[in-house]
Length: 194
Picture 1: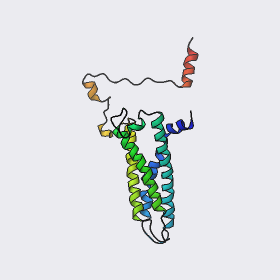
Picture 2: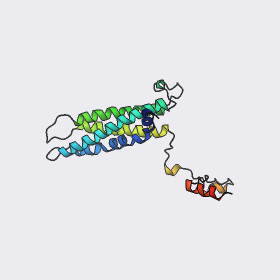
Picture 3: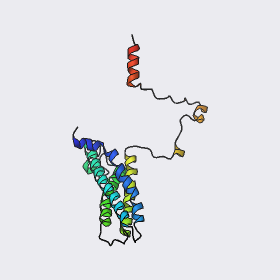
Picture 4: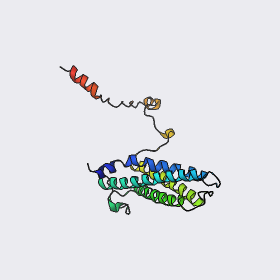
């Protein structure tokens, strides 16, 4: 396995850091809006969260692109044209949300590093970019789960197959999945055979 394939297989793991950072970034930016003494530690907190989110977004976008090229059914031209085989509007929204998250993270970080006096707050543009970054990361995370086939239904709408209604209608109760023995259990079974 090449390192590109390894990175492509880690896309699901790598998206957690940028999503978490994008969800958290509005909190320290909001706390850094006030001016006065003692505001500089909030600047450092904002910049640290933004840097980690931006690096995570870069890795997530790169691994997602590689995963699409190496393993996905979506070809390069399928992003723009939904008539192409493999074109999926949910995939397009996921890719656009990931790219927007990367761009908004870079813009937010740039606004956090603008020159200001020691007593000034971080500024409203940084807060606005942080909120938009959070929204784009949530969009990418939600649509990514939908692309891979996770059902995101609320628990109230989930159907329970072992409910009394299914047995009262005369429908057979579902069978439990077969148990797969562990390696120690398999060795005991093989040792007991004649």
